[in-house]
Length: 185
Image 1 (cartoon, helix red, strand yellow):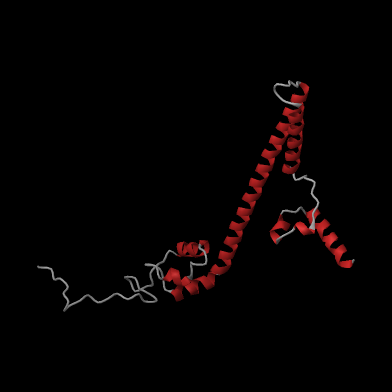
Image 2 (tube, rainbow, N blue to C red):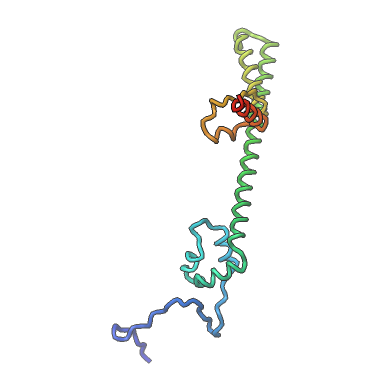
């Protein structure tokens, strides 16, 4: 039997996306809700119920919105974003600790070199000034790496709130006491 082809006079009817498409048995189709939920929760502000509903094979906006409300996807997204932020902060702290430890080791090595240089001072290798400079640089680096730098906070030096993030809790208390003292004078 010859095949019939569609013509301009006999076009194929357009398929419209309905809010609740039916599967072959007349039941609602099974969606991969765990993937849809994960995509929303892990997405940024551009991933919305509406943007998900426009994807092929995804349910309508109302169906997604209803399911999301039942399962509290908004709260799950906030929890996920909080966990990601906490993990990033922990990574930053670990990196900072690693850098501090490495700088402390370098500082100790410079001090050791200075001590050895003083014990076996050979004018052709190191001058007394170079030995003293190595000792100073090494001890300064080690103190700073361990967070022990001597630092006096001057209110005039603070230019933005970001400057406050670099202060230790003790320095913040000292600064707060100094600012209160100025206000009462």
